[in-house]
Length: 407
Image 1 (tube, rainbow, N blue to C red):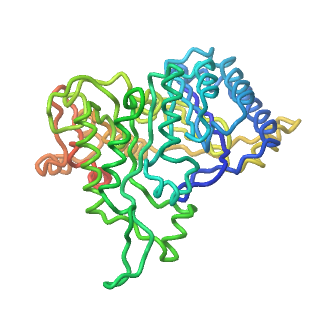
Image 2: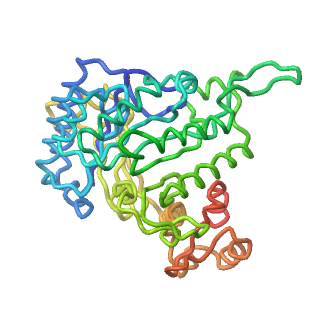
Image 3: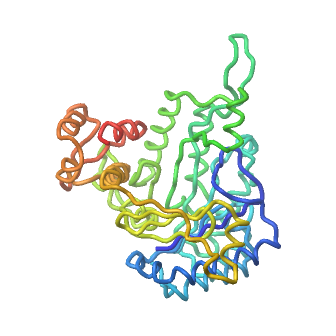
């Protein structure tokens, strides 16, 4: 299970704080050489993760890389992993997708494409500093379908606030950003994409990340966050619309096209037939399996207690990994999780999913009194198909608060 971080973008979105640099062609060769050096150095570590045979190329914006560079990187990884993946995902920006590029990805062996759309409203896209338009996103999706992709994931953002404006009643956040009707239009557009709706949808509430342009706008009083009540209303709208459209809500923010609906008011397998389109790579993260992250800012986990990560510094990454002396190469940063931290992460990650966590395990890791209290208050429920406890979909918006009561 390998993650490859592409630390390049053509421009920065206002809400994003992930590590990336503005791409320039002369960086590509240096980055490629550094990744190959890291890959060679960590072969043994990577082979220990291959019980989950997935490759995920994310960023940043992987689709800004020249195709020949991306191809050589994929081939280098395949020499270590064998190149046989149960799932091979690449993140793309709609603005980069042409018929030729979609065909290139298909020929590269990509089985799943994750496209960051975020909205189908051009005013919102401009405010986010997204490079594409709504029509551009539809056109890109059509290109992927025409190239034969039958497993496409689309990202959507809800819970937008708005630029601050002066009104007769004082300062308020207004405009299209704060309107539920804008989200409703986004969902209409999402479910009517050419060639059929996406097999997978990730719907995220806009969050303020320190280091992002949006965070700075809030600090200066130029932007106001969406009120919790409105954000909760929008989350319910997303859940209801996607359930009605045949999606399984298998993780707090993730929906996969599934089989027939049974009508249950819950996330997960007893609400719908299990979906073949659950993201295998991300699901493995939530299950605590080992993985290796390559590239600057990428994280790794040994599946037991050791987490490590590369510094978020492209120049330092390239300099150290291309050094002639192996002793100059970085060992990265790492931490050893305590039993308490491992227990906390197990509960936190499992309760984000529709599958939940076995009741006996939850009671072993957490207080019986707290578990019983949350069950009485219906913040937790028992699955009707197994012995697991989980958070019902109607409480998904406050899942962090519920989990905090346990850990």
